[in-house]
Image 1 (spheres, rainbow, N blue to C red):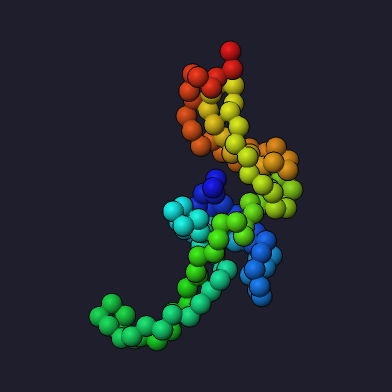
Image 2: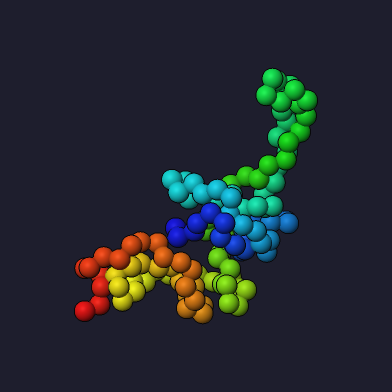
Length: 117
């Protein structure tokens, strides 16, 4: 999973309002392959009064959804696209949008064994 926090994504699967919704990734759970997207999969959590929350009541929060149900937004076209990984000439690794080939940022420092000679 090559998602990062603050990546803009679109929900491609799901029922109701979640389908086709766009938002930023707020949290990533790599162990369970889930992401929390801003404004998607909102639920009401009923909270009892406590010292931390003296008012009590209902809190609205986003729940995690499967990472397979979201696609990255291509920065050049604004459409959903797959993410790929490639090595650059200096041996560093970067993410790129498979639709347009646009770079999405480096994810690993340069290494000699991956540098083109």
